[in-house]
Length: 326
Ligand code: RI2
Image 1: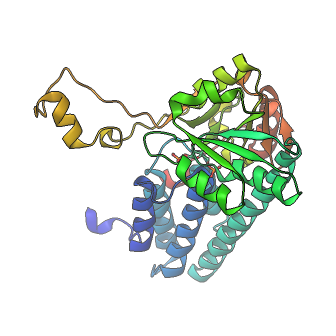
Image 2: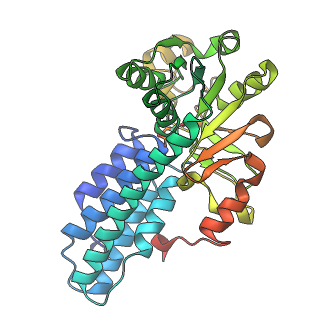
């Protein structure tokens, strides 16, 4: 059977591996890389006929789809590109797929710029934002505010276990934004110094729930208690259309070694790798209910979380399909 599997180009497999390992990470960046990988598959395909070409593209999309389950930007990107694959010949299919992927990538970066300009309107001169993880959508709001001549400062949460706060801090320093880095446990104390909580999203559900890096929900609850508004910056590629029909968003559970390296584990268990009484869990995301979110900022404007479903219906219709599983 295996020799009948459509050939997926090694460059696509390399992108899929990088997404799974988080060398390529962040919902928008993953979507961009996945669209680029489908274009590469189209470019390099040696399929002899249109059916074989389509099967290869679907197989490539499947491999990319199976890397990480939570950020809906990935299936949304794959769907968008595969739906644009049109033509009666291999040459036409190739050209239409590459065009569609290029359009997707251009739209993505434009959407982020627009979103940033809208989000920047919420930031006043002298404001302090508290960030969690590393979100290019969230940082585009700070970038636009700085371009507008506003002085913005940031309290950057480290974000265990992978410390993406370091990426945020590096980016902000490149823009000359003053940064205070704090451990996640210091959140509540430093909320007193913040004017906004500013985070991104991996997926947004139809009821306005925000699925983002683990720790976001606790941050939002604390912010509500402290009276600090919570702003979620999310391009519409993060809207999860399946949630309109009752599906839930799968929360990715990652390898425990991200939390506890093996030598440290051995210190706890006395070197017993089969100690059933000791468990490490590593969920990558959590769900922040809409009541703890003040605004979702998209490239179409800002929305109270409860009304995001209207935008979702408008952009995605009522149903979705998985063209890679045909
Ligand atoms: P942008 C990240 O997930 C973070 O949760 C971040 O808030 C979100 O993606 C959105 O990032 P991970 O890939 O699309 O680090 O705004 O697990 O860049």
